[in-house]
Figure 1 (cartoon, helix red, strand yellow):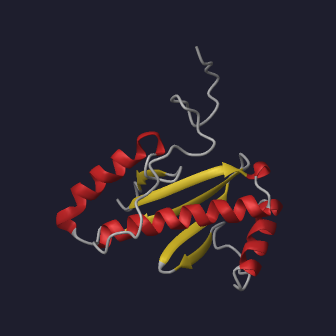
Figure 2: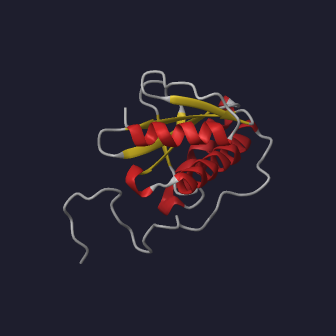
Length: 158
C-alpha cells in the first residue's frame, strides 16, 4: 500500500475524529451521514473514491440511470466524478480519482468533501427525498473547456 495515501488517510481520520483503522483488502471504508464510500489507491499513483447509489425504487431505476448518464456529460452534475455500473453487482457507482502526488492534506480533504457531497445529492435523488442542492452544472475545476481523454493515451490535441 502507498505510504503517502496511508498518511493522508491517517490525517483525515484524525481530523474527522475517527479511529485510524487499517484498510481491508486495500480499501478504507467510511460513512458520512449514511453515505458510505471507499478510498483506495492503485499502482499508477492515483487515489480513488467510490460509493454506490442504491436503486431505492426499482420502478424509477431507468429514470435514475438516464439522469446519471446525462450528469456524466462533461462531469456536469457529478462534481467531477463519473458514474458507472459495477459489473459484479449492477450497482450504480460514483467514482472519482486524482493523482496522489498532486494532493496535499487540504486538497485531499477537499477532494473527499466534494465527493461525499455529490454522493449525498445522488443518494437523495435515488431515495426520493431529493437533494438540498442540485449537483454542480459547472465543469470540474481542473477540466479543460474542450473534451479530453481522462488519461494520457499518447494522443495530441489538434
